Structures are given as structure tokens and as C-alpha cells.
Image (cartoon, rainbow, N blue to C red; front, side, top):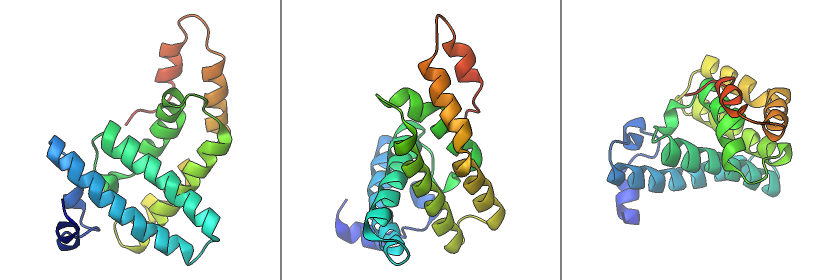
Length: 166
């Protein structure tokens, strides 16, 4: 996909992020990369450069690695359940050394991206508030990481079922 093709597609049109084939997935990933550049520019207007970069990187990881690559989901189908499934399960089992410092940075990015989507009328205020609440539930995610690290025998199934799945 060339840059000319990118410019002809609306980065804020949810239908451009529908995934039903590998070609759709590649297109959605490329569009998401461009959208994240716009998001990063927006963040730079409100945050210090390092914080803006950290939030953009966190949103990138969530959107491109989890929503697009793993879930093959439209990035604008973002909701609190997806955040909890990501942070309380997928991140933990997919990361070599899951830790709260890294996860909090990612959650800050997700929260800022949800707010950005609300400003662009892609999410409503209630959805944004629910996502923000899910991102702020640090004690829950800390408990999930600790309980995963302390699993014994065949405890994984119960641990896995204790977290909502999207």
C-alpha cells in the first residue's frame, strides 16, 4: 500500500479497520500505524515528549499486537472488556517478564487513545469512562501478574477463567 493509498483512505473511518482476510489485516495495520502518528502528534500538544512517546508506544502495542494481530478486531471496537482481557491475561502470558511498570505505561497509552477517539466522536463519553476505569484498575492487574507468577500444578485453567475474555 503506497502513501497515496493511505492518504485516500480516512484514518478515522471504522470500516477501514474491518478484518476478514490477511489483506485486510495488513491494510488495517498500515492504517493504524499512520493513525498512531496522528495520535502521537496530538499527545505532543498536551504531554512532554517522553510521556507522549511512551503513551503512543503503549497504544501501538495494544492496537497493533493485540487488537489487530491477535484478535483480528477493529481497533475502534475498543471497550473495557477488551482492555481487561488484554491487561489481565494476554499481556501477562505473552510477555517474558510481565511487570506493572511496563503495563502501566501501556494502559496510560490505551486510556489516552480512548480519550482521543472520544474527541474524534468514535467512542462516546460512557465508553471512554468505562475504558478509563479499566485502565486505572492497577491493583487488579498487579494481582493477576502475581497470581500468574505463583501458579502451581494445573492452576492455569482457573487463573485463565478468572479474567474476562473478549
